[in-house]
Image 1 (cartoon, rainbow, N blue to C red):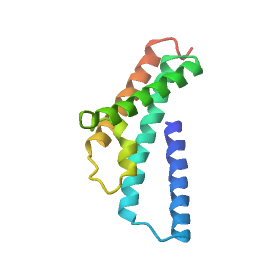
Image 2: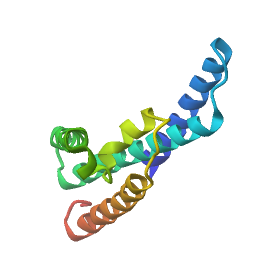
Image 3: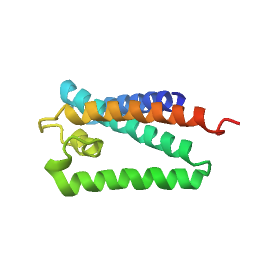
Image 4: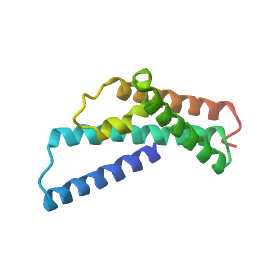
Amino acid sequence: MSALGITTISYALGSAAAIYYIGILFEPLPAGEIFISVFVYWVWLLFVVTTALVWSTVSKRTSVAAAGALITLLLLNLSASMFGELTSWTPGILPEAAVDIQADIAIAPVIVSFLLAALLIAASVSYMKKTDWLL
């Protein structure tokens, strides 16, 4: 939970600073579109942190956990860009949806990402309780 909190606070502060400076240097951005974009990318970041957490739970070696999380996220993004419509409901589509503010953003990838993140966190906690991981 601390990693998710740090990620959220850091992303919120960074986004606020970027929006502020863009408003000073150029012209203010449309608040609704920016909020949607920031929210969708925040969901992606939470999914990334959750994936890293799961891999860290499964493996006691940090290199394996990092490689597993990177490969998982890379395959998720590649499948979303290669198979488009077939994977339009997966979390892999979120970075593209966050950038393309003008497009109709489907709510399905956001809901699937939240549900999958909750399931992965629950599975990690269950795995840690059943193994000697905490010892």
